[in-house]
Length: 299
Length: 280
Image (tube, rainbow over all chains, first blue to last red; front, side, top):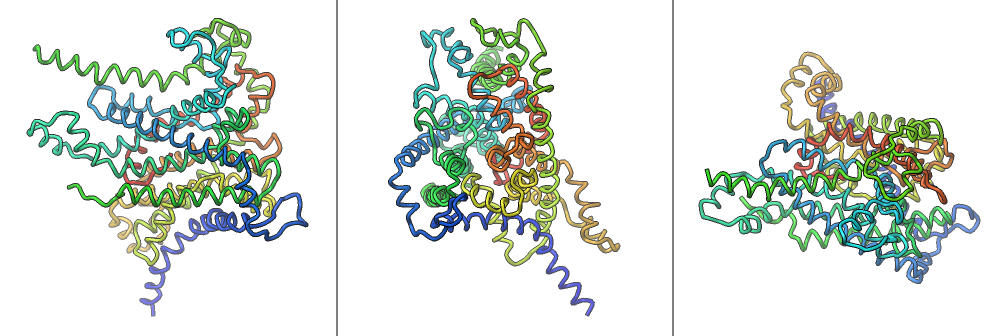
């Protein structure tokens, strides 16, 4: 009898311990996801209770005819791809740099990684001021270096505003890539390089034939996560341009939030959210499949 | 001799020079806001741009702290971040312990759930969350931010803490349990102290994320005395005139807590990320 009770207690214990965790995730994450799908098929404007109800695919047909949505979709792709490519490139360089042996490595690592801790809104405030047309330091430095002749009005055209935001976000995002790649680089045993040295391999050969294949899975996972998060950034864009001028820097997540804020149209905003989720799920699956994530053994 | 000089020259070009350039680029924006925060308002908007704060003034900090509700925003942010951190750590210790120490049905599913949910983007579930908190009467109440930030940070922190538990052998707590200690007591009195630095790092991680969170704060709080720092500062960027000196001072003050915490956790980040649990 005693033994049975003890056994039950041991069986049930992990579930008891996981209960708060799973309850929170179920109520505030899983339920909202399902709710988003449900809302996307409803007329659901929070201020208009009497007309609420199922409306089939009306939100989606409206979406496909919404020019701003398509503009935002194109901007989202550009914003995400440019950010991820730049951050991957510079993150890899910084990680290789910090993987060398030199004095004060810990200090330099900490200094270079600090932008990681800066919140999106603060990034927006800092860089908006640095890109300011009349008293911005970036314009001033570019003139001093002789790269441009006059002042640049970064935020008056869509493409330069977009690049200003991409530069700001890349500054914040490079440390994340560098941290992940550096931690992967440090798991590579030095013997692998030593045997290549014996064979007289060049540095370039070692990088492409040894380093890159060994950190491939990290690169795949990091770029995938970063793609998802970059697409979903709202604060930097909202803080720097609010999607302007004339929606030329608007991305879908910012559009979702602004739609919900302005019209309280939960159904329409949810339809956009559903599209984003579906695209991300399909993209992730294809990306990991094509990249052969975790399928190769190296040792 | 000649060979070592050659080596040293190569090292200068492959290591020290690029290192200096990267460090300057990464730190320059911080310097620029620090510099601006000590300038007089009139000299901020005047050309040519000054690269040093001359004349030097601390007026921006004084005006920042005395007006514009900055102290309120700071306290709101502090409240939400501290309470969230406590919740996250308490729940993640229990969950992480279960995942690390027990074999049970559905373990794989739980782990997968945690991996997938930490990828989950914020804004796509904004609408249903707003409805939930509206029904709970928690719109314009800081507790809604505590709940949502706890939820968002739990998956990663649980995975991270379970990793720390797995690094400690279970013999100590088993001995304590044979001596009549309850499971909870043995966990909190014996295992938790040994992995405390790791737990503090995961808590710090949740703190930084919560401190920086913007979208939910903007949408769930409607009265200005409930605003958190990112929302409050974003409003200071005003429609017509911008008090850049005050804004810079506010940004510097808002950065201090996270930068201090970052100094502590950055070495854990490199370790934590190596285990495959990633979050930026």
